[in-house]
Structure formats: C-alpha cells, structure tokens
Length: 73
Image (cartoon, rainbow, N blue to C red):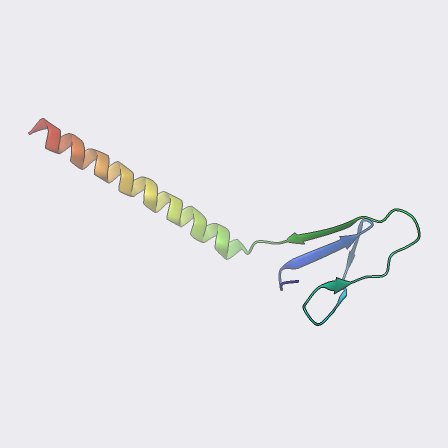
C-alpha cells in the first residue's frame, strides 16, 4: 500500500496492518466480504496534468500557425 492508498472493507474505511512486503492484512467476517483498494491522486498531479495539456495544445496551435504562414509564402 502507498501513502495515498485507501482500503474499504465491507463499506467501511479501514487502516490495516501491513506485512513485510506491504500487503494489507485485514480480518474478515464469515460469509461474503468486499475489499476495495483505491489510490487517491494528489491535487498537485491534476494541476500539473492540466498545465501540461494546455502547453501541448498551445504548442500544436503555434506549429499550425507557423505552417500556415509558411505555406502562404
């Protein structure tokens, strides 16, 4: 499990103990059990992703404008 990992067991968030290789150990109840391990992405990652996408779109737009100028001459 990583720092941003979240484990939900049977609809309840749990903070499990980890074994030697970092796998969560949980106690289950008799019958059907559901465990959901998810990873929460940092808001900084989302911001950097959007900045990167805007940069690539701007670069493609700039290249397209330069290509049109070159073809007109």
